[in-house]
Length: 447
Image (cartoon, rainbow, N blue to C red):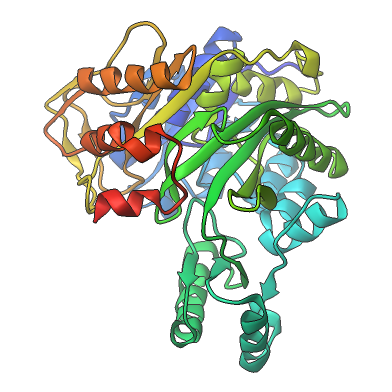
């Protein structure tokens, strides 16, 4: 089956990103949008667009009946969910199939099993990957939880099983905060994800966050596109990503990438996905954390090093085609890096919606920009604050960092606040440039 028309069930820069690949493949596109996004670039660039509801996400971008109806009335054959919103929603993937639409992502079984962080750890362990043993909060009494936490030893990390994107997580370093935090996170998880299941795992004090990009098809082929380092984080949300991870040896790099392929083969995975790990720098050991069954915000980092269009491969896999590449075809060139530009106060994270009076995007050798904004565009207050991603590629890490600083210097966003200066501060920091940092690194700069 070859797709003639795809509906993109998302907004912002990822919708624009998918649109561009579809156009290169000769596929017609349908964008959906809320009333607040009528003037967004993804609406302007699509062949067709459908308004599916008011600004509130639950009434628009999470409105499954409206999205499916939009696909039906426009004659779309498939839906690409992008990231966030419905990208890892098992019910949505099932309903797409029921309505005769192809969901551009993995099979429902993979979404179901790998989307549950507790179950995914069990599966990863069965596949032979190293894992941090979880304490299953919802299945135990307070006395049993406390006993197991003391055996594990503080600090520990409480996580929502259905969480993601850095939400539903809290580090605890003392007994007094344990149960109040559990109750608070249960409430937040139920409200945010519809599931209050929590688990606790050991908190590694000097970790790197390393993830491996994999691609798979329905014919049993699985390859990896190397690893990304996502250690620069704010409240567990990624800020800067790069590839390759600058602290891994070649032997450790081979081991971690092959383990990701091993897991994908074990679950019969059949699309793009990311296997995420915590790497203990002190012990030089990595542990499986979770698998994201969707495209990631930071996927351009892998694309720039390999030249592989991940969206195109997702579409081909959903059509039933074989991957365009074998592992031996993947060549890793140079170093790449991504900075996420958000419409927010750089040091408080308070969103800064409003009119962009003037916007100038950077350019030049080794610079890529994924965005959806323009001069005169009003950033709505209803959604994630990310408005642009700047990606640089260079022969080595130092040149890549310097190129990113130059690109940020060229970037002009007037009318609203952005976190551009925070990125520059990180990139110029001696510890960052010298690879002497962990996931706690940003706390130093934000003090």
